[in-house]
Length: 88
Image (cartoon, rainbow, N blue to C red; front, side, top):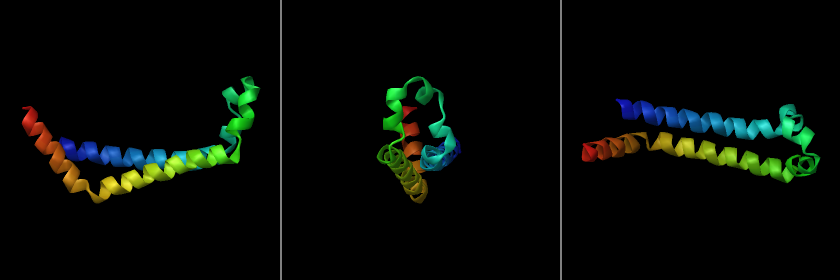
């Protein structure tokens, strides 16, 4: 049972992090943060649309990982159960 919960938490984490990485680089909070205000040379790099797109691309990959884990849920749980039995 604990392995099912663990896999579900991981899937939820992947989706949540993926959505965050897709949306956050294009928000106002990305433009007005502590690091960009106190380190002006970094401002041009972090506000570059290619960099923001790369971060959003990581979010898409993370959502894809969550989908893959969701489609292979039973296999992942079975592998974790098998691994737990060999360690005992």
